[in-house]
Image (cartoon, rainbow, N blue to C red):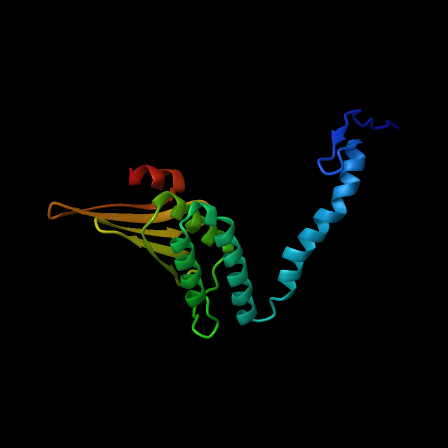
Amino acid sequence: MTAVVLPKQHYTDPWSHRSTTPVQFAAHWRPILSAYYERFFIADAEELDSPEAHLNLLFKQAQRAVRQRSRYYSEELTTRLLKSLSTLLDPEEFEGTVPQIGSLATILRAAQIVGECKVSLGVTEDGHFTALWTDEARTIYVESLSDANVRWAIAEESDDNMSTVSSDASTLSEFSGALV
């Protein structure tokens, strides 16, 4: 039988400034991290006994996601996104497939790329979040297909000409390149 030798490295705990071994460090932080995980993920999953509860949970998660990314948006855009989400995910008005939070996260990353424009959010029948941004010269439509894939279209008007560019499935980096 072979014994496992732990490294002799020491980590410095940033709060107590004590030197600890990897085992002591893990023993200290594991209960704290597991309590966090249990509070935000397992407790939320137990509340999903009805479609209304699922929509309410999705709305709470969506609010959390928008607020986490709010440093990238203006206060007006953050308010507009939260208001649009509250209208869109209203349990009394919602019909169709309940979307996944990952789909919204992709739309929020796309919002960082697009910048400050008027935005409207929607959900397709398949449960994908969509966004429509408009400004004076162009209209941008994005549908989140999966974690990082999007379907998008850009319509620009210049000198009485309308030009459109679109893609059925691409990454956000390809979408970002098309905006330039």
